[in-house]
Structures are given as structure tokens and as C-alpha cells.
Length: 78
Image 1 (tube, rainbow, N blue to C red):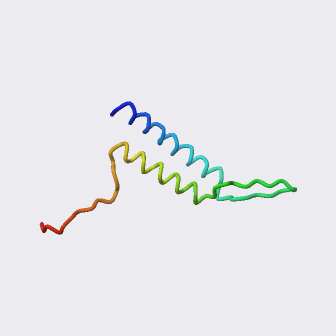
Image 2: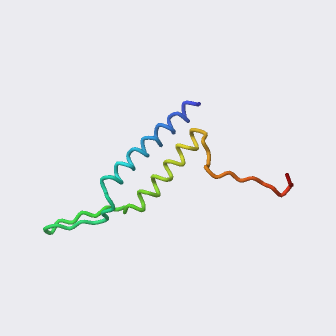
Image 3: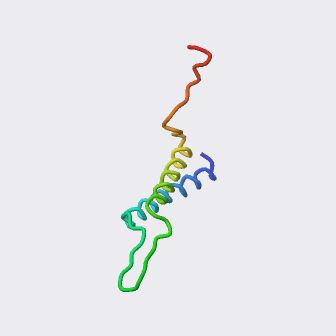
């Protein structure tokens, strides 16, 4: 594996860890208000899940695992 590919793989693996941690911390809370203090997560849980899925796909791609779904062209017959 090339140095650039190793660096990209390390980056995306780190992103997966970070995003999983953010999902645990967020616990689905999009906004919170207490005693006049408001806390709003810019991204809800759905946005984090989309980013996590993208990061996991990038890790699979860089590791060479590819897509879990394969396409077979049967138009030419068996």
C-alpha cells in the first residue's frame, strides 16, 4: 500500500472512532435548554450517522474490501 493510501486509511479510521464517540455523547439529543442556557447540536444524530456510514465505506474501499453488494451482468448469458 502506498504512503498516501496508508495516510488516507489512518485518517478515515480515526474519523470512524471520532464519529462513534460523538454518537455516544449525543445520545440523540438535538437541543437542550436549561435555566436560560441553550445548547444546540448543529448536526442531529442523522447527520452523524450519515458521516459515520461514509467514513466506514471509505475505510472499506481503502482496505480493498469494496462494496458488500456485487453486480453481475447476465445479459450475455451464462
